[in-house]
Image (cartoon, rainbow, N blue to C red; front, side, top):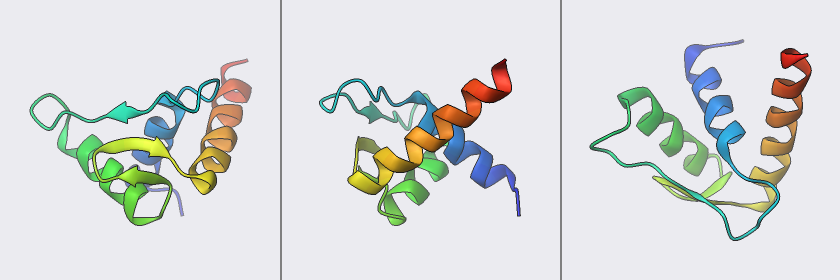
Amino acid sequence: MYTNEKLEEIKLLDQFDLGSTSSGLKIHTHEASEETIAAAARLFEKGLTNHVDGGYLTDRGIEAANHAQSLMRLLSD
């Protein structure tokens, strides 16, 4: 089922730079929305990132981000 929570996770996965393994995300709790903070925590719980507030993608996270970014490109055309 498509939920707002999953859409927030996809939006975060779309922000990762897949061209660089040394590039991660840092979710600043004083700037980010509650939805973004929660999405980052869920990605961590699912093993897609290495830190609760973003961090780097795991191998599984790289695969998920590739799919998310491919989908976003397809929908943008």
